[in-house]
Length: 182
Image (cartoon, rainbow, N blue to C red; front, side, top):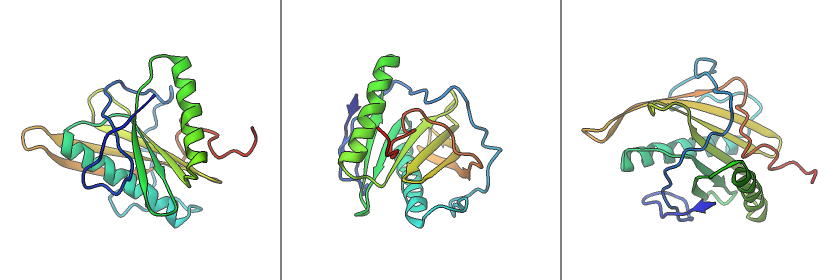
């Protein structure tokens, strides 16, 4: 369920493996036009801790670095820890049963390793110009939409516009991770 590969120049202490299948996290596609603010200064919605905001900033930076390095993005989960480390894992699944097992494994890993936040990156269109990062932390949920452009010839990211969404995007892979009920 998890494939791992080593990130170069990243603060993650986990290793990762690139995966190509796409993860459809939900049937609803959020609109990046229903956002709060843009740019890398990331003005987050109120009622979020600074640590949770920083977790999103690190996850978006990691995604941008991956895009610049490999020229593509795939679905990933970011496990963020209180010691300022982050593990990034590429995702793939075959069917709905596998998706449910993956959801269970993400929750188990987050709780066993005492992650304080879990963020999922999902591409939202087939042309590769928009992605959504949805995250949860105990008592908090948030989502950002990133509109981007990548120039294949120069291998550079030419646009990276981050917008906080007014309503957190529902992502079945992370819903209920920090719920205390069994």
